[in-house]
Image (cartoon, rainbow, N blue to C red):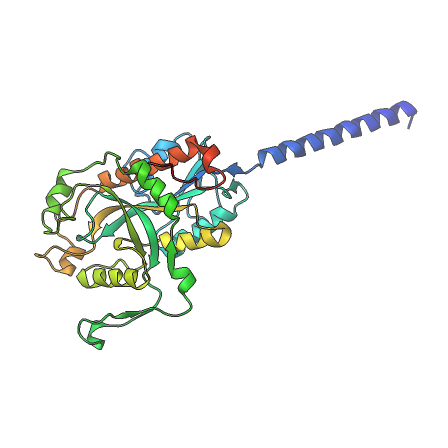
Amino acid sequence: MSILSRGVARGMAASLSAMVLFGAAVAVEAAEPVKVKVFVGAMFEIGKNTGDRAGEFQNWYERYWQQAEPIAVKGALTPVYCNADGVCGAVLGMGKVSSSASMQAILLNPQLDLSQAYFIISGVAGTPPSRGTIGEVNWATWLVDYDLGHRWAPEENKAGEPTFMPRKGYESVRLFQLNPTLVSWAMRLTVDTPLKDSDSARAYRLRYPQDAAQRAPFVGTGTHMTGDTFFHGPGMSAQAQYIAKLYGADDYVITEMEAAAITLVIKRLQGSDRVMSLRGAVNFDQGNPNETTLQHLDPKPGETAGGFAETVENVALVGSRMADHIVAHWDQWQAGVPALPAQ
């Protein structure tokens, strides 16, 4: 090979190496993870993410992610969507197993950096008529696992005595107090949110004699009870309140199926100081005085509570005010929950 040919070959090799290095640099740059500021986890969607009857995710999706490309995450139920402001969200699945498995997959996915993210666990729920109403939106102060322990049939116990006993060894996984300062921020920023209501929900509330049940929708706080069992009836409701008090939590006000499990996953991987649980009540956890528990469980056509569409919209209306505030003041929130300003 001539000197000229060797020079040309070396030049081509150098150019090729430079192109490879440039391509690698571009690939590294393209692989930079999305820095998530707020992550919204819903539990289910009824149909599509937009344009049909809304489940728990659609109102969030239409607000933040209509232009977003889906990010596929191995092990998660659905893709994650992110906007340019660092607000991301996904449908995690119903129940403790599906939702927590999705959350762990998302947290461990290298395409997403959730190390400084705030989490809004968002969905619908039930409420006891002595403490809540249809259409209300509630921020959790405590999350309690309803299932972990010993439980037996009422007829196998003395009349009126509890039929539940905690099991030792579950202390760290059955009870979570959410960051009180973060809960206070959430209430301060959202308590005056104008909430939607419906004629059907108004009429349904009047079937219950309790003052709380007859209230118009409002924003409140309390203990959220997480259980795979979708329990109904005054006896089960009283047991949920008993467990909440037994564990030193606030009044039980919301029954749901996922939040404690999702929070456990987040806590193990990066701590739970930035976790929020936000639920909208779409049913009471027991029937009215004129129906049995079984009738309440399987209502006749036209006998349902109504207000579902308004409630899922209320949840997004309330939650988005918190998300938008965090994003707009990220310099104050990035390092952690800021102190509350003096009133």
